[in-house]
Length: 150
Image (tube, rainbow, N blue to C red; front, side):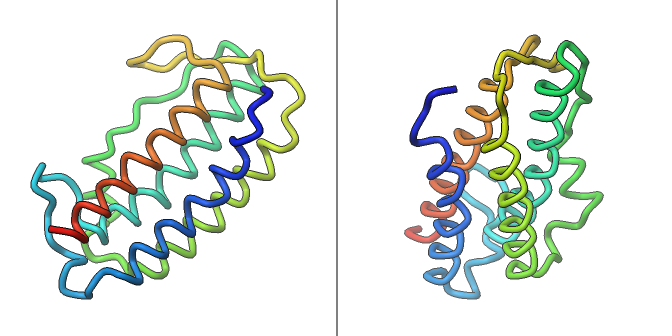
């Protein structure tokens, strides 16, 4: 992959989340968005959780091309892992740690031609996997921004 913005994008996202959380009043952490999606507290727990899955799927694409990855039910995981009662700052630190692991892995990928088989999206190249992750990051940055300004 020859995308000079990929590593900076991956590295900067946790700081964006932290900046938004620092601006957010404590009483807004548990307000559900207009779309009925996650609260700010749940978003941060979700990001920490999803980051582990992102790296796992990327590793499958790179290291064992053609293998299937399992379905990830984010709503059920939110319940199972009790996102709603998580410590937002602990989850942010976990997200930062896991993202740093992802960045380190991405920096060392030599061959981006690998792919995995996603249960809903079909064949996803390593580049598709990481690009989807970056898109997901920004979806939730907007989510937090909207919660902040509402």
